[in-house]
Length: 480
View 1: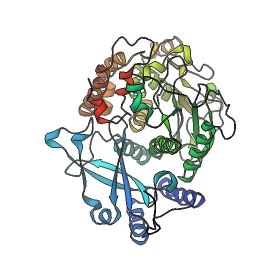
View 2: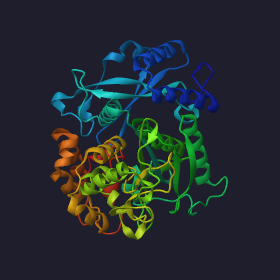
View 3: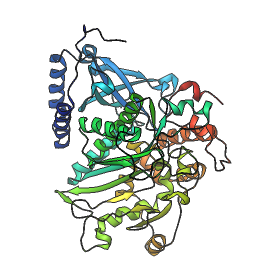
View 4: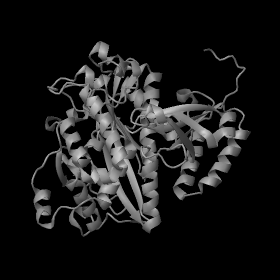
């Protein structure tokens, strides 16, 4: 609809947006009390007349981002009584006990570029609660936030996370939703690794998405075309674990909105096209305590401390059990194909990129582990919570078996059915998630897998795209 000049909605220049969002993130990182931040945000919303709505976000058990727009005046009156129908969210409540609550997480406040998200809106994340106000078990974001808070309360440990997320840019809008009709994706670029000329569509998309990220307070580092045609990767600096998981959700949202702006589709399917590299989400983790990186030891093997190696050993030991949280879809196991540089070996290495964990060359500040066997459609909150808790508290191999497991080559499951069997039988994952959430997660994964052919073959099938959890069209999901 053409704007008439009668409306005066909030539109903030990009440099001012970056300043405001970085200040909000600094408050969050510094641990400014939620009550104090809420008071500031409420005052801001009341005084800023050009804001029309607040977009409130939460994620379901699969990591699908849900957004509700609340009129600003209503939100300020009713922030303590926001409810929604949980039975309409796959993996949440059943119909007869459907009502859930949302509690706004006031420090997670973002001002948005108006040319991409529309004028007059701000965005905030929310915790999902039961009817009685207690934390909802299937709210994986709330569980990650609670776990990292417990680590800090115990001994001052801060978990830092940074991801490297690959995606594809395809011709046309909503290409994933149209895939059941077209049966293919069309590239917009035939370039390769690090190769894209100025003003080409892929380069223009990357440049614009990077500007949007920077305006939203991301600590941008680098961006570039990836190995496959029309493929891209954008990197930003490490953040506290929950902030990092929030930024994964915002990154994918921003990329999709920027692509739509250009009449294109940004896709984070792990393996959308047969016979080329898929998309990964390498996940870098380090732990800080008393302002010291406890993973670093210049005299340790590959520059890692005993704490770092213990973290790795625990993840490797439970790798088959946690694989479904790293690779959560039928399509994700297409990517774990060794013919396409896939990190499917259950081992850690400083040089072998087929290993599921890489130990990058680093100094005291940057020492970390890089979990490479993660698909970009993983639920980031469930993923990070699982990796952190497994690395710190998961079972260790028996002493006489540790060296054997570390040196011999074992492989991650190559299909979702084996991954589900491992997950279902895992006492560790049952303990980590609790019986209810463990069962709910397995149920939604089973539902998607059952809608796809078991004998997958080599070709990408319509059904594995159609029933992929990031394709949110309910009508498509009703097709059997």
